[in-house]
Image 1 (cartoon, rainbow, N blue to C red):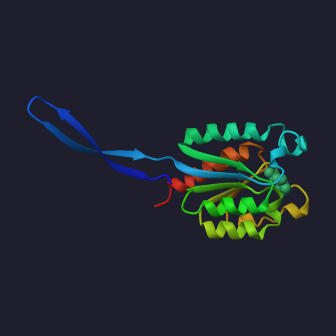
Image 2: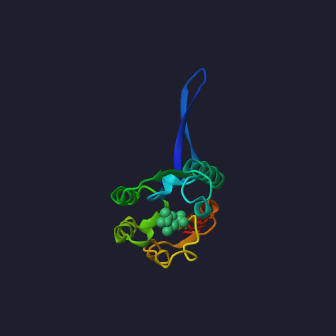
Image 3: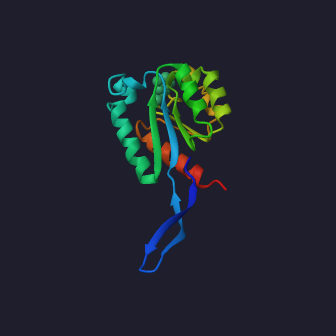
Length: 177
Ligand code: DHK
């Protein structure tokens, strides 16, 4: 996990009568680690309903997120799965291993208590993101189980929802005591 480590660096100096070993302190800032998870059907971005989800592919989204994360000093693990169980396992695995989660659970947003329970067990600060505005679509998309745990949600801005999601998690993590 991203923590400030204070290490002692050992170095040696050789002169003609002795070899003296000295140490000095050196602070290294490890990047905050973010698990970025995409749920079912998000592998179809760019092909699937472009009027709703845009023309960018999942790979384009990954490149955009990598670039934004780098500029914020975050390290991201970008994942997608169509399987609920795999998403649950990924979220469980974030406990004690990731500093933050960005989650677009796709349709599981609206149905999966298992994902909500995984988030609650992982206890990792989470921001929910969606490409589309889930409040301007069918009524069944209005309910989000992920929102019960998430610190906040960004939706309706296409790929830019992820950019803002990354900025939000960066802000949340950096304003912790
Ligand atoms: C993605 C999906 O696949 C839908 O099932 C959700 C979400 C909305 C999105 O907008 O990114 O309802």
